[in-house]
Length: 630
Image 1 (cartoon, rainbow, N blue to C red):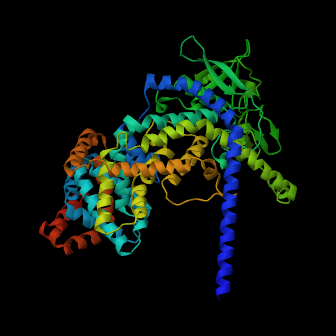
Image 2: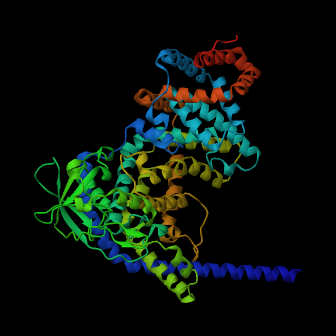
Image 3: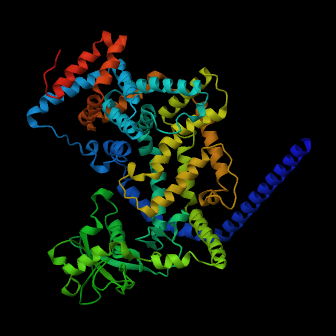
């Protein structure tokens, strides 16, 4: 028996040593690869900084396009909902007959008073959460409606959140798994916390962290657009994401085209494009340059403008697909500037779609042609033709040599990823420093909530620093910052292309890795994002630790100071929100679970004293246009 144990220990040690050796080897190889691309990174970074100078001037001139408070909260709270931009909370349109509007609005104001009764609201939330069909998605949506409905009294909202949070913590402590708390948003209170952080950090985003985040977004976008981007596959030559990397080497040339804008004056605007860009990509780059001092929401859409090329005395309308498009069997290639033979220094005219910009007869989409385009919609390609069913069968029977070649190519791809990473490094670092530095401004909500977590840990005799670290990480960096980092359009008036989103996801994952205390040992099977930031992750982790320590040592934020801060937010922004719509949507849950809520209120002594069930019945009668039986 002892011999078996000794043998097991020896085997384990050998495996550990072997894993350690492999880790060091990979680390060394990565450092070698980074060294090989360092000079290229320096040059690329210098070029990017020169080109970003124009962007910085634009920022100074037009300001960072931070969304107003209502649009920001609409996007954070409701854009991820199933209806997206058409969600009633974003549109603000309530379908109420005009004859009943006054009665409904009065009843909803009474419902608002009822929600401001703590006894009613806690019973309401508990009853809903006890319903099996009240899904995680419904909880998230309900919490967001509640946030808007109670926005006028954020001190009260915070009190409700705190009460529910103490209940949630008790559950996890009793179940002896406190580390799991706040890992997801599976309860109403967890989503309430996300929204509370979003509300309290809006001004901080606007005044402090917004600029480095915006510059990071612009730097990624600029770097991505410097190289080919496959419009169909949504893959780019310059990216941080291996799954979004354009595998094939595409030959391309940078062109500067001179653009005249219809009704935009007599001067042409120079715009940098690539000869392999599709016509839609060219339009987008032109729009980006021409309207750069306006918020993105005020830009014309690429499909609403026409691009005309003037190679001489003739004029030609450029389109993604037309009768001149290259065909190969069932496949049709999207037109590029190269397809039309547009050269450097060419003159292009951008105009709004109209009768005068209809294609010439020789390019007119005849009905049969348009039908063919629609028929073949899924059979178009841009830079790399996807593997066809016939080719796929052949590729599955690929040789061992082919697999070895793929492995070699992967290393080349990693070098390319490292090159992009090196070019963007300064922008990534600046963002991390802006949100993880306790020596700078720390939003009062962060200090207040972190102290609350420390107090609760002490109260429940939780001495494990890992648990407290996880709580803080799950309540701020993972709950708020990662969401904003992955979705810059939640705070800025910008459009995020899929190829830019792919790189932002890698940085967001690195940010998440920095917040965990778990050590990730590198191996050949490690995800590329972990390989990319293997050198920096130690410093990022230390940054997070120092940030938490720094906050702990700060002067506490009193309840009174926090309430004053919350009251200021309520005063400044509540009038702009769709409060009445939120109340109407919240009432739908009351209607759906009416009997269960009435029963809960009738069984609660405090609710009985305040006649809360009776008040709800009166509101229901008014809203549903029926005579009450009371």
